[in-house]
Length: 210
Image (cartoon, rainbow, N blue to C red):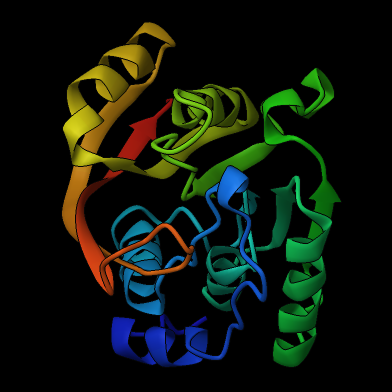
């Protein structure tokens, strides 16, 4: 399969519809097509971790990372999310792209059964940062991801937490490496947001398990 260039992939992902009524307790924010495209292009072009691989997306939301992984040739994708409304929009998005190798699972990511352990080649995710509610949930997501993946995990984390995230990952047997430092443009989504948008420094980290 020919690899989409980042701009072409971004154009495709701009067709993914976001949350109709985002839920603040779940920290529901759409991963921008720009960040998703560059993240996924790096995963495939540098590490060959998508094409032909069994891929999981934890906290998939409306599906931008899963759909992008499928467009880049993933053999099968399984997307996990706790919110039925998000998965309903996810399914609508998948149908618009006419993709047939994606499954969804409605569950709390933190309690995925141990029977899924080491099922996937690659896990991708943009977990909640735990800044407004549920402090530490990003590391709970990461711990689950490291149990599910056989080869590698790719995740976005606030740069301010880098040292702690990498130390925890190493204690769980992974080899973390920061692949990129990104500016996450977080648009005003909820009533308590006073600014039109806020830039957050975010790391794209690869956690190698081999």
